[in-house]
Image (cartoon, rainbow, N blue to C red):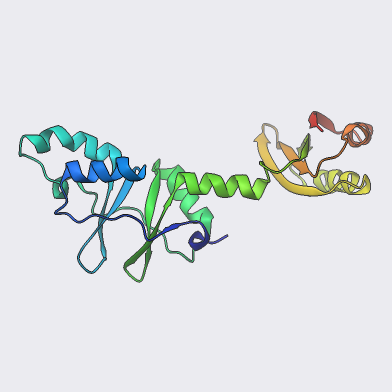
Amino acid sequence: MKIHSLMVTDPITITEETSIQKALALMKEYRIRHLPVVDRKKRLTGWITLSDLKQGLIPSMLGDVSLGDIVNRDPYTVSPDEDIEAAARLVCRHKISGMPVINNGELVGVITETDLFRAFIDMMGILTASSRIDVVVDESPAPLRKVLQVIQESGADIISIGHTPLPEERRVCYFRLRPCKTASITQRLNEEGFEVIAAID
């Protein structure tokens, strides 16, 4: 999935001449936590967050600080044609909650952690009516293939698969299935020597 399919297009923007109070009012009005800062040609010149603005509010009332003094002039950015994994890595690695999307130096959108979370939910089918089986498998490919074989032979349809690493080169695989009865699948997996730690119809 590409960033352009998730990003907010035509985002609310401000210039460095915008007051901190006005920027805060815009965030409140549109219920957002970030604002791209642009020049008159709509080229990105910085990025400001709600946290930045709150820290600068009191000094700005005393006349010592303007928005231009607190703007981040070198924010992390992504391009619209990058995979969403690129944005997710930046969000996790740098503990940021969003970033501008740039194409040939021009601001074309904004992507936030909320957008990425929504994509994760969609890809995993979490909001879709489903059943789930969680199975402990070794890291080698053969056990996973065997679990897939058991599920497919049961006639169940797999919506998505996720996994979490465990110690000793093991992992828990989460198989989200279209609604079905999981008891027979669980029994077959147990017979094959697998540890089923959860099964939800």
